[in-house]
Amino acid sequence: MKNPFGNMANLVKQAQAMQEQMAKLQEQAAAKTVTGTAGGGIVTVTANGAMQIVSIALDPEVVKSGDVEMLQDLVIAATNDALRKARDMVAEEMKALTGGLRIPGLF
Image (cartoon, rainbow, N blue to C red; front, side, top):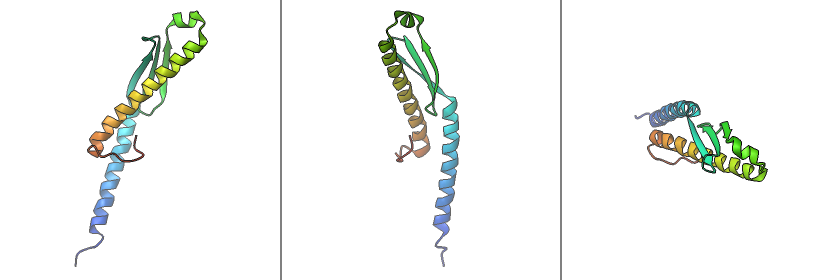
């Protein structure tokens, strides 16, 4: 008689292996950074693969201008650009792990 739980045990092992690979990938992604810009490089924002902002650089001239609203808009635009690039980077790496299968809740 065949073991009815044999396939289930194999699936559980595969799921655990994939989970370990995903954790490793997330750790590696957190160490990688991408840069978003706005205003032709006036504002530069760097984010990592963990979707954290790690730095913001402002051109001193934009600060001198005193146009706070414009600076705020540029910071938002550069941040959104950096986060989009970070999501795309992680999605590409996940694609290699999942074989292109889109799994809900994974980046």
